[in-house]
Image (cartoon, rainbow, N blue to C red; front, side, top):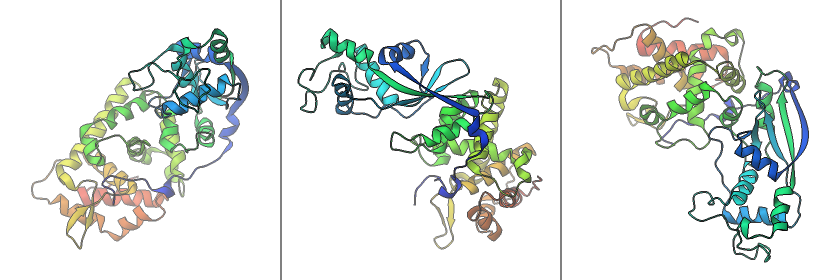
Length: 374
């Protein structure tokens, strides 16, 4: 059993709708000279905390070797933003390899200038050389080599959901992006930055059960999920029979992507206050499962349990909750985790609207003795 909250696969179902018609696309051939200039001048951007550069030096050298040999270069995918800048959807490894080589930068985390590896996998004419050690014709060939870019743009600047679906379907790297990794690309703004800030909070790291950031951004998605489910009673989706969680979180993040500083501060304080309440009343038991046979808390709760107790704690805080010395909240927590109706609503059809409502109502009532109304 993992010691941190983990993802439920059946809540990550994708979706398709007419928002895809809000996306236009076209092709353009760009030279590496143009791409390097665009990157230098801030016209070509990588998403905030996008996957880091992962190629090793042999892979990077082999790519440059292929260019010098005149082999075709795979296409890249860019998204045109409202301010005319281009966001790199796919192709970051290729672009940064050329950029670092041409600029004579150190190879990623090493202390040495980026020279091609001295290996038989590289042609002997440029094996072990830096860009400046190449002949002028070879330098010119790298700069002038064109790469086909497929550029996507939203017809409606306010609607990002179609762009999310485009990102999801593009998988030339061979490793499918997780929903929050895509949101980090699509919904950049003050709210996304707030998620990163809260993700570094010490109490949150303790609550999540893992000191280091989750490499696939699931910890960030849980924070988003908290805010989105906490506001579920204000949403139109509460009238539906069920929700597609991925789409609901996308819409929530899109609607809040450019919140002002005051709203950011309010949400920041709301999240921290929620964590403090649960830490105060439950201590180390917070966000853990209870094993009745062993009479101990082990492992970690699932996301539906997480969003229920977090929403309940926020509601209690807004209702003026004050911890009572006469109440054993840990026992209440055990009662909640073993409540048959709560178990059902957090383990079966978890995106059913009645189950979402039921688990929040039960968590609020059993933990805090309060009535939550939708």
